[in-house]
Structures are given as C-alpha cells and as structure tokens.
Image 1 (cartoon, rainbow, N blue to C red):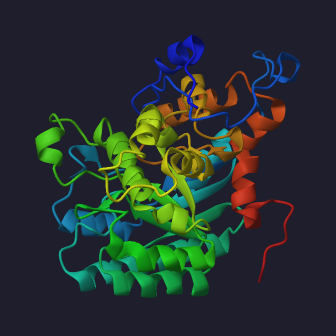
Image 2: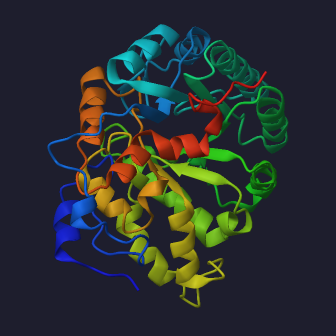
Image 3: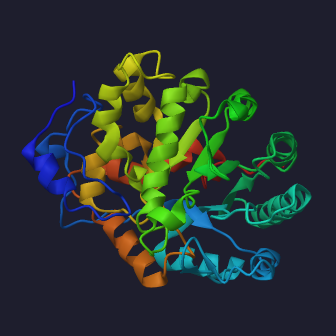
Amino acid sequence: MFKQNRRSFLTAAGTTVAGTALAVASIGAVAAEPGPDALSSPGKPCSCGLVDVHAHYLPPFYAQALADAGLVTLDGGFPVPQWSEQAALDLMAEHDIEAMMMSVSSPSVGFLKEPQARQKLARQLNDFAADVVSRNPKKFGAFATLPLPDLDASLAELEYALDHLKLDGVIIESNLDGMYLGDPKLEPLFAALDKRKATLFLHPTSPACFEAVGLGRPAPIIEFPMDTARTVTDLLFAGTLKRHPNVRMIVPHAGGALPALAYRLKSFAALPFLEPKPEGGGEEVRQVLASLYYDLAGSAHDGAIESLRQITSTSHIMFGSDFPFTPPKMVAANVKGARELSGLTKAEHEGIARNNAYRLFPRLRPDRATEG
C-alpha cells in the first residue's frame, strides 16, 4: 500500500526541479524510520569524505569534436564546460571527495552522424578514461561510453571496456536517437550487462521532441528529470530490469520526476488494456524501484531524501556533484547540503556520503589493495 502523510508532502514540496521530488505517497514501507535517539545531530554535519558517482570528463579531443560539429552549447543552451584532470583533483581536494566516477555526459557520441565516427570517438574516450584511472586508481573510476544505438558495435565496445580496460560500468543516455531503453532491440545489451553484473549509470539527454516541449529553456531544467522518468518507466513496463536483476542501475538527480510518479506507475501497472506491462503488477514496480540506486547531483537536500525514502532505502542513495557542468558555487552548495542532511542516523549519513558507493565499487576503498 502507498501511504500519504502531511509531513512528507510539505517537505517534498520544497524540492527543486533537479530532484523533482514532489512525492506525496509512499510505495510501501521500504525502510523503518530511525528512532529520535539515533538521528544525527542537526548541529553536527557529516564530516566524512565523499564519493562522487556523478561527475563528467571532457578531454580536449572530445571538446574539439563538439566544436567541429558546431556545438558551442549543449541540450538547448548549456555551455560546454572546460575540464582537466587537475581541475577534478583540485575540486576533490577542496571538498574532501575521496573518489570520483567519471562519465561522458549528453550528447555522448550521438551528435556524430556516421556510425564509424561514433565508434572511433567512444574508443578514444574509453582509452582516455582508462589511462586516467590507471594513474590514480583510488581517486578515479569511469563508466564506459558505448556507440549506441549501433548494437553490434556497442556490444564489442562493452566487452573491450569492461573485460579489457576494466572500467567500472557503462553510461547510457535516457534515449538513443528517440529510442527508449525498454525497446526490445536493446535486449542483447541488457543481457550482456546482466551476465557481467555490471553497473549502468543512466544519464538524461534531450528528448527527440525537445524543440516542441522545451519551452525555449535548456533541457537540464525540465526535460532531463522528465526523460529520466520516461526511460525508467519504459524499462519497468517492458520488464527489462525484472528480467535482468543483476544490472545495478544508478538513476541521477534524485530520480528526476520518478518519485512523483511512483504511485501512479504502481497503480497503472495493473490496468488490463496496457501491453506490455509488468507481469508482477504494482508489486513488481515497487520492488524494481527499490532496487535501483539514486544519486544526489543537484539534489542534496532534505526534500529529496524524504521523497527517495518513499521508494527506496537510504542504502541506495549516493552523492553526486555533476562537475564540471555544475558551476563551482553550486557544487559547493550541493556538498554543503549533503553534509547537513537531517533526520538520518550517523550510519545512514555516512552511507550516502561514501559507504554506499564503496559497496557498489569496492575497488575504490582506500583500505583495499589495488589489483595489478
């Protein structure tokens, strides 16, 4: 049963669009509320180190490829930021970020028209990321870029990146030239990820209809949270994540619009005229949403946590900075928000800050020996 309470509604109503956390209902009792004696003191912020699971990299050759394609802004108006490995290390030192997972943000390699060009750029990006990780394996991890929607080439790159380069997972955009992730054409890709028990970092991109629905504003403001929810809904109703339970998926920006839609998705899952739909109905929706991981990029505040607790446990929530697309002052504000979250036990707070990520990526733990 979903439950509604005035406190969760009022708290969630203050959530920013980055988290889109206007949840008014629970998707079942995911985790028991901690007792008052176990809560962190509001006057004592979490001072432990952070693990950033949502950060991006733009090597010079990628920035040049964007420029050559005429892309001086991305996704409806966002400037292409400058990035360097040293800038990332400086940010980490400033905010006590112990480790950072790198990925290529929207538009990935999809802005290139020729499949061969996408394949070449994806390979360059993965080799570059592997080199950064090899020189600082406890500081950096990386998600592999795939030349989607070319399935055969993406399966080959997946094998190269995960089996040879030993990258930490893959990043896939919320839609691939308008194809959402529940599409049957992508079944072999999810089977390959499931076989490897791989981590999939989901990242939003502009929908195919962006010019019609974007209101003249950059996609990250409204359409990124919406497209995140759109593709997770497609995965839920296609049964993809139920068939491939070993895929560990991270949903960005506190789930986007997903927490607000959770009750609706569970209710609609049982409608007889919908096909395909979750075989297990609303209970399957609840279970799958609870199994996903969620980062706090642009969303580290109490309202987002309150909303996410309606669909998952705090053990599935992790920190994210969205560097370098998020300006330094906003990164600092998000770090501050993460450290000052209230209503959490010390273990929950430290879990969100770093320990949940270390469980997902154990090789990054400072006390774990680096494999040769």
